[in-house]
Length: 265
Length: 162
Image 1 (cartoon, rainbow over the protein chains, first blue to last red):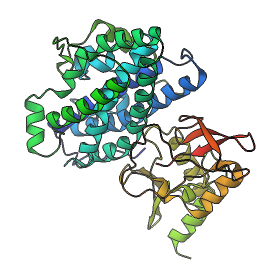
Image 2 (cartoon, chains in turn yellow, brown):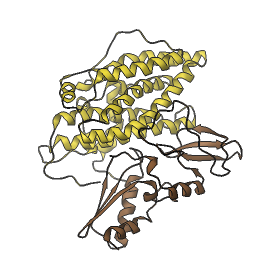
Image 3 (cartoon, each protein chain N blue to C red):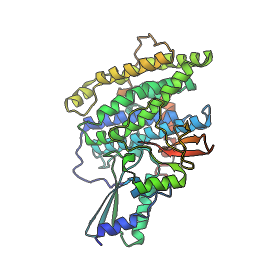
Image 4 (cartoon, chains in turn cyan, blue):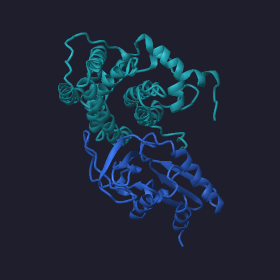
């Protein structure tokens, strides 16, 4: 809504890459949640999941806009907008974690995934609220209040399903077992995170993981669910190596924009 | 009247597209007005990150100002400081209640804590009873939850504390 300045863009590729990771996580999770539209077990749940999706989408829009400005003009002098980044990047250019792109499966698996993501996003955005990068701090300061609702929602469903009937327990446990190994990519460190920790921009993955463990262990115990024991740790999302299902997600997300460039309604 | 005051007077008629009884000023969405020469800068902030009403609010601001001769208008959207229900005016709270929406129950200070299934309870905007139950945390818009009054049996929206 504000015209972009044509000079003095303050190119910062490291912060751009970090904002893109955060924005990609939010956008892809929002897309996965939105797949529940008109398919939820009850109408209130339809509204709830779409509310969670909308919060993710809102954060993603600001983060992608911020990343686009920090990337600076491309070879044609064009500063990439949120739409350019959302609709015109190919699979290897996406840097979201694998956990958020996993197919939601049944409602139990969707809620297990949501618990693992929300228990990460709450301490993440709380920490990033004091990031040295003003753009990231601004988004985080808003988002931290919103993801608290997501965590609350996921927690109450995981407890209700886990401590519910034999069938609901079996299904949420199965979903949890399937998504669990993917959570640990969220806490990886790499040279980008190291450099941004030095500058006070990034959140410390080890501190986030500690809070994540505390929340998740508490909820799973209350839900009478078993913490999975697998030590398999799939990774690669931050480097653009994604799961098979991600291509289908992108095709659905991008086909309208690519088929009708510049379409508005 | 200063140019800023004139602009503010025009904007005092701009309402929330989804809750048309309350103005963007009552809501705390309108953050700042600056006039330099003929250039008007209006600063607004979203209630929730994904609030779909922001584009419409921007268009409403532009058309309200254009109708009064302000043509050179820039609308800026800022995220920081993050909007809170603390900024909602007393007049705004009363308008919400009269419209049938229970206003936020408290003045937030600092980050809102995760309530973990124990939401702060509003009172019924119709009969003022405190005997109410939450039906769903997520209602017709991001900023509201849906409740039912056990005294008068009416369902009602609650503008969530945020």
